Image 1 (tube, one colour):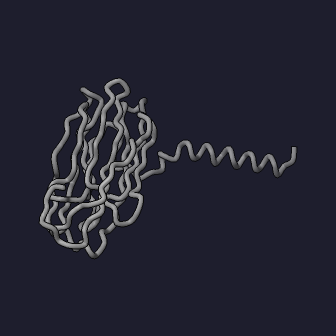
Image 2 (tube, rainbow, N blue to C red):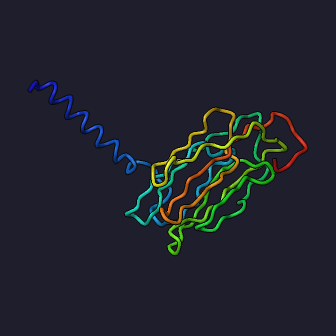
Image 3 (cartoon, one colour):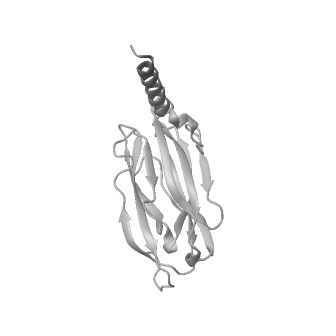
Length: 191
């Protein structure tokens, strides 16, 4: 067999093997079955979320988040808070109150239900209002798959999520709530 062909096949196999284990190289904010508290720097919001499921490591996920500064037109956040919390094993829908944007996430693992409770860290930007809101499709598409959300375009922000829990598969699927924000002050709250 041609030495160049053998070298090419070997390098392709090595690249494929590396891709299937790339979750070990991520900057995860938690270990399996561990709690975490992640907050973006002041004036930044969450723009990407990635998780990796492992049945062998407690039917749990590793999580990582990325932040990005908000546009100057939004100004500085005037207030930040931890919003409502869900209980492990239950469905949950949460949108930041007071028209807030998601700037952090915390979670605690519960052995009794092999699931986590969740809470969003929300920040309020003056009196800006959300519009053109949408929900993503299920992330991951199927339970127990690797999951990734990257906000699809600049000017959209994560305002919350709807999540369902499978008691059989012991995993969650997420639909993230994404919105644009007005460039002007508005009178409405909690849209």
